[in-house]
Amino acid sequence: MEFPHLGAHCNVQYCKQLDYLPFECEFCKLKFCAEHKDCKQHRCTKYESRDRRVEPCPECNEMILVLENQHLDEVLARHLYSECQGPNSSKQPPKPKSFPCTLQGCKGKEFVQVICDKCKQNFCLKHRFPTGHKCSHDIKSNNNTSPSLFKTNTTNTTKTTTTKKIESDYLTQQRKQQEELRAVRARQQESYKTNQEASVCEINILLTNGEMLKKKFSKNDTFREIQRYINQFRTDGRGPYAIISETNPAPFSVNDLDCTIGELNLYPSANLVIVVS
Image (cartoon, rainbow, N blue to C red):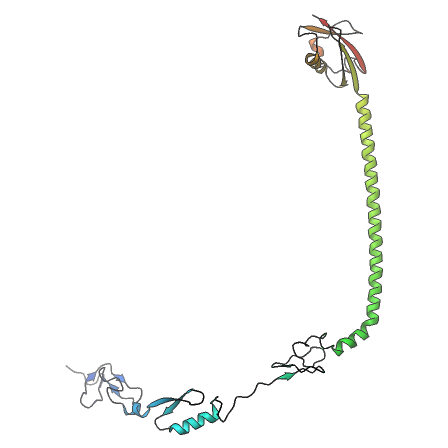
């Protein structure tokens, strides 16, 4: 069953097929079926009238578009006059503009302007800096600012002298402080030596074989240190012994081991005797 109010019939005379989704030709604006949608299939007259070709230019080898209603000689002549870049074309490409250097005696040229920011003159790359072309603006500036430069140098000299004086005073103060510190340390060392010498006690120990041991102890050393020294350096054997003092014939007891030399009245010197117990 067909629905004539839906879709469209193909415009090809021998087809006339009803197509619910017809294709519209972009050239003739007519509708066709899927089989005749191409321009060649339905022989589109508008498409044939738009036939075109491309020909190369004999001078520059550029491809030139020639339509069906145009003549090749006319298109080629128009191209040679307006667009062609070949050697025999009527229109030659414009020569690039150059900018000569304004410095006297220089023949340099540049394709871009190189203008000095101070004198506003154009120069080549070699003379583009103010020192390269002896910029007149710099010379005037130096002449005008010479007095101020002299004043600045004087001020700088004054500041330098003041700075040196401050540094000299600071170094002198540092030396004085170091000398005072050395003097304090020397006094402390002398005081320490004096205290050490004042607290030294000389002990003489007579062994059973008649030999004598001599040793300096501190006033704050205990009697146990004396006993340990005797046990280490005695030469009269390893037998049991007792220690007595010349001033006190009673031997020292175990309770005296933890007493200091000063507490046992052995300071500043004492003579001890070893007896066999």
